[in-house]
Amino acid sequence: MMEFHISRGARDRYQFAGNLFSFTGNVVFANVSASREFAHRMNKVRDVQKHPERAVHAGAIYAMGLIDEASHVLLERYRQEFDPAAITDALTWFAGHIGSDALDRMLLSFVEQFPGSSVYRGLQTPKEWLTGSTDGIPHRAVALEEMILLWMANRNEAFRPFEELFEDKSLAEQTAYRSVVEKLPAYFATRPLVPMEDSEPQSLFDVLRAPAVAAPGSLREQLDLIRIKWRRLLGESLDRLLSIAGEILQEEDLAIWLQFNPPNAAAEAAARAAAEAAAAAAAQRRRESGQQQWPSMVSRSEVPQFGDAVHETEKFSPDVAWMPGAVLILAPC
Image 1 (cartoon, rainbow, N blue to C red):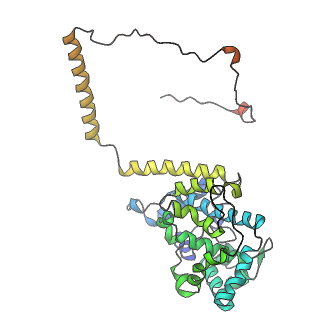
Image 2 (image 1 turned 180 degrees about the vertical axis):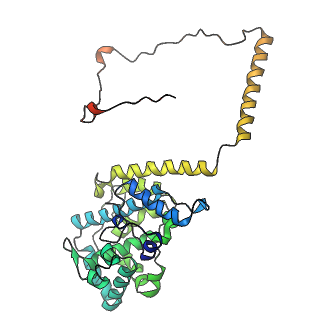
């Protein structure tokens, strides 16, 4: 399940469908199609027909949701392998630094500004939701984890074109949010470190921030870094999706470039003229030197040798279930 933080204001503005959200109040990008619907709603409100520069693209939204989901998976693996109480203990730790009342007000304000589906639909008040739990995890801990990733999203330069969806200015102005996020490195420095294959062990905070720090302007590069740096903890569960998201971004980048850099008719005509002039000059040189006008159609080539056929082995791909039902359709050029 791919998720991403969305504010109440963005929900109201773009009228996102309820089935795009999970209980955490994030958008669910279960597939590229859901991301396209999300982008379509934004582009419709932004009137991109008249203002194409305001357009958002499904691939970028999908990539952001996938980065957020990978962060949640990393946090869960960290709890399973190293520190089961990492987030619940954080509630106590921060209460000791900013006070229990300030912490509660911050979490309540977060849920009000970034509500889950049940709160947004009026089925629960923010206070009622915060007192509950899901799968044994207190919602106060869920809210704190989401708030940590919200702060990271706001500090990710590659997310900047979409910052209206998760902008945290109001939260910082009205609560102890800024004091809490400033202390995140100090808190996670007190918890078990994460072993890394190509470097010294790092805090969970540093591991989560690493892709955005190393590739601040590129979602595609961040996806690649997550595949490489987080592979041991993520396992293979997200590897294929991360790869697909990178490929979609690459195709979108090309399409966007072509949209604003259309082929230049004058340049193409000049190139054709230059090619024709070069061909005519070559023909003139052949006539003057007595060579035949066009190169001969007869040529010789050596047949490469790849080794004794006795030692060649067949390497067919394994038969899989979809092959008997495959239909090949050849379209005329």
